[in-house]
Image: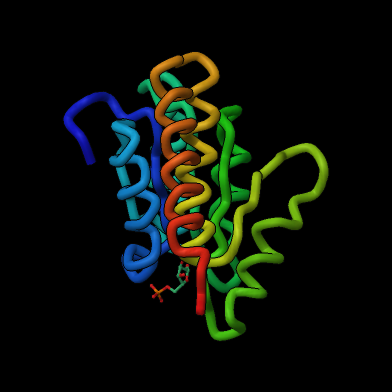
Length: 163
Ligand code: RP5
């Protein structure tokens, strides 16, 4: 979490998701984006989820990332209570995250959840997508995204010879 007003809220259904979701936080930090992270569950703490999400817009948040595993309804519940873009990250589970993926991605038409990959890749990509959304009205963030892509490309090229 940073001291500035959070632009991104990183929510997850349980503290046990943090090992993976910290990668979303680290990625947002890399881009200098103020965020807050909260472990709140759609079924264990429904009132707290609704309170946080329904005040998010007026508190200055612009994107919400919501991660959950198993019967993963957190992202859908979050999306039901805000018009902010909601990015869902399925957590690994007893069924290797397939249940989480389907629960998160299969939103009936009308309330969208932009769903990313299961686990760490999804956590990182949710943060990158949140960055891209914020970058639409922030040129310095656009440049940071370009620099990030260039660095990534250079690393792959530098290590492309395998034998
Ligand atoms: C979900 O159940 C959480 O998002 C987590 O992925 C999973 C297991 O939670 P714990 O039992 O570890 O708290 O609600």
